[in-house]
Image 1 (spheres, helix red, strand yellow):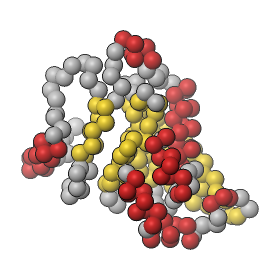
Image 2: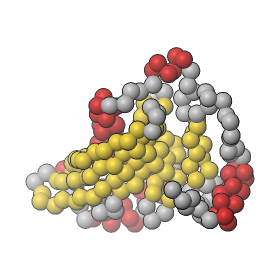
Image 3: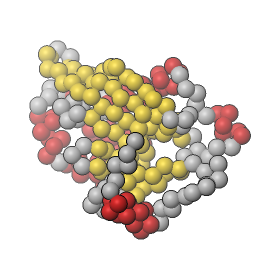
Length: 200
């Protein structure tokens, strides 16, 4: 597989990591587990580092398995996430996602309380709500869920969303995708993207 970055882009990436204090470790101890996200190019404060659960003998015995049980847990997390109402996001997003997590759309944006507050006041949400019946009648179903596990504490999920409303023929559909990591609290969304036609 060819490297997607040109020499100049590689140098920009290296400088961004160095400026953030994020060390690109080589030959790290096997108990070290971390994940980094880069919003690039042009985003302020582009590096965010989250420490994952250290791998010890005890924690290794408690790490999630791979298979139908974890598929069901991840599927339920995604379903609850997609059914959240806008006014619930501030209070509940950490139940489902890292803080910050990364949203990938027209822009690649780290999502924090400040970002959510701005979104709640923004024109995009107002326009999305204006096209829909009252959200109390809303139901979002996750279909065609496919999960690829990267080790036992990282996963990539793709799925199809169907957004319907009780007693109303209006339907929105589209595809979504997520990168998830397993923390001591359970699975959390690290990055997500979905078609703009579906969801709020």
